[in-house]
Amino acid sequence: MTATVIDGKAFAAKVREQVAVHVTTLKDKHGITPGLAVVLVGEDPASQVYVRSKGKMTVEVGMNSYEHKLDADTSEADLLAVVDKLNKDPAVHGILVQLPLPKHLDSDLVINSIDPAKDVDGFHISNVGLLGTGQKSMVPCTPLGSLMMLRDHLGSLSGLNAVVLGRSNIVGKPMAQLLLNDSCTVTIAHSRTKDLADVVRRADIVVAAVGRPQMVPGDWIKPGATVIDVGINRIDAPDLGEGKTRLVGDVDYASCAEVAGAITPVPGGVGPMTIACLLANTVTACCRANGLAEPEGLTA
Ligand code: GUN
Image (cartoon, rainbow, N blue to C red; front, side, top):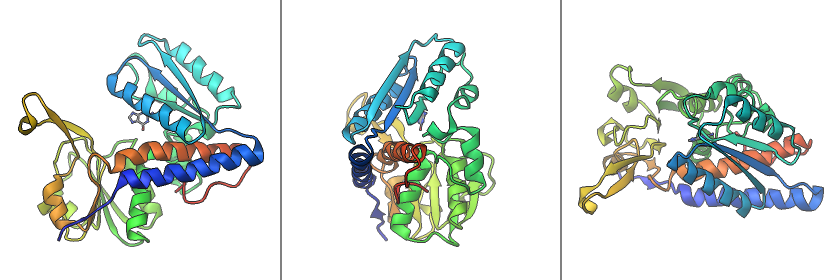
């Protein structure tokens, strides 16, 4: 079997188009422009790239983008004051504090200081609790994007065996909750899981989010399974020339694509969906804040 490639880049472009349509309606009918504020502390190069990309796409879909770049040695009190100001600003419908934060800052404290209604990352404990109890919440962007691709490819997920590799608060745990809410039988596997290969072989859906390059080989995959690869790992690629690197996922793409029914590539799979879902969450937050109907198909 050769797997269908799930094109996250094209899917994300469609989601952004839908977001742009809703933004136009909000502006033209209601005189509201959704606004997304991103807070970046320090100079982590990867974070700077993400933040730039988020700002660009926010503007492209017609929303207002507010960037707050703070020095690496910003105090917790000063950061909390920035978040508080954004919480109170009616032009700001979504707030994202870029992670990781410098070590002297308490990420949990900062995230939990964001107004849950503006928490477009879905990381605030209120949103985690709402998702865990199947209530309306803000849903973390990477799991939401992964869910959208799974639903689009498979239709109903009801009754399917899903294995999530990785138990992070950002991806693994919320992904498992979303799959459970869609009536999958869910296993969360992690570094201490015994007989991991056998666990993965039972899965109709594999979501890999461990941050270990190419750790899932094709012979772990059940024939016809759907594989969502959340990993983005940079590895040395001497075949491309001295000192060259390439991006790879958490699954070994070549061998998994031989066995799977469908698979997301890296790059061009889950990655582009994350920012598209951030924009979708901002529109959702804006609609909720203004008592308007939420856009269909852009939430879980
Ligand atoms: N750093 C890497 N991914 C993310 C994300 O999804 N949200 C935030 N806030 N920081 C990140």
